[in-house]
Amino acid sequence: MNITELTVHELQEKLKNKELTVTEITKAYVKRIEEKEKNVQAFVTPLTEQAIKKSEEIQSKLDKGEKLGEFTGIPIGIKDNICTKGIKTTCSSKMLENFVSPYDATVIEKLNKEELINLGKLNMDEFAMGGSTEYSYFKKTRNPWNLNKVPGGSSGGSAAAVSSEMVPWALGSDTGGSIRQPASFCGVVGLKPTYGLVSRYGLVAFASSLDQIGPITKDVRDSAMLLNLITGHDSKDTTSVEREKIDYTKCLEKEIKGLKIGVPKEFFGEGINKEVKEKLEKAMQIYKTLGAEIEEFSLDVAEYSLATYYIIACAEASSNLGRFDGIRYTYRTPEYKNLKEIYKKSRSEGFGAEVKRRIILGTYVLSSGYYDAYYKKAQQVRTLVMKEFNKGFEKYDVILTPTSPTVAFDIGSKSNNPLEMYLADICTVSVNIAGLPGISIPCGVDSQGMPIGMQLIGNKFEEEKILNAAYQFEKTINFRENYKPQYK
Image: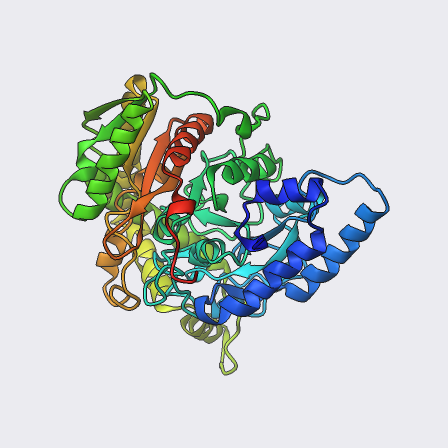
């Protein structure tokens, strides 16, 4: 039995039946990291020694007959922009290279309460700005399906670690597709929850009105289970919504006969790769055989969403990243003559090119004389995007689109062309603008054997519908059993 191939719900079953111990599971993942990390490069800070020590402590409690939680002893990986007490949180930036967080993010508190085992902090595009994980200060993460391809971004380390079976599941963050797009590129499941469902306290802010923490997992059931663990109102986050607690695993087995799925024609037009389109069309046929009703409609948001997203995201980034000034806990230039020089040189040396680009763009759209023309206008268009989605959900339960217009591209092929990289987000950004939930699940591979992702979008706080639809599709195509990445 290959332990690292198992899903989390399978690991739980083995632990429950005493077929495996917590220490055996953790050591299997540590061995896998030792074997694969040199090629995949998914970790910024591996915590393998601490993980084994914690697993032994937990196993000792179990051996003594102590009653522990349902997820106790399950390993996990954490994107490196989520604060972890006593452990580096670098955001893959020189600016925070040596920053050790003095507190845990709320989601980490929840995981610690359940006694999950942190295997390490995972690589990302610097400050979550990028779509390929090539903008990390430390390393370029590679796609396990083809090591010459990008894993997507900005949660590329999280997706690659799950795909290469170095962690059974991971947390990522999604500002404009940063969970869903890497999940699509790496052939795993990525869920972006409704804005406000999961606390953002302790997530290093990129764009506060768009950021959301969510799960990256091997299958849909694991995604529902991890969502169960991290949701809930948090008084430390004013955008956190107070709602009744839901068990998202209970919705999975429902039949989807009569489910109304809307397919926006604008998302299948120019720029969508032919093979991606073909696989999505096959997926629609599968949904029809499952009893769902598929209908094409017009969702006229795609052409406005990208520009709107980049104006809002860059404006908020410009504001949020102002705190990294070389004075307090961040990188400080070693040579300076005065206060102004500390600011200028520390920020020039500490931030990478993509972060600087977005700060400059954000400062410009917020500046006097341009605020009304750009930022205010973008916020008005945001309202229109929300209204368009609301109209769609009056008729449909779920909206189906590609996750990305293409499969994973070659490392280095777009990193020098920012506009081309930004266009890769065309299918995902509107979900963040409207604060909706979206899930990416694999729906097949292209002729080169690279995974293709399908995105299911739900109305606000209707994660159950998209999880149910995703699970029923997943069960039909058995992606994990039928398609294997290169590392196998």
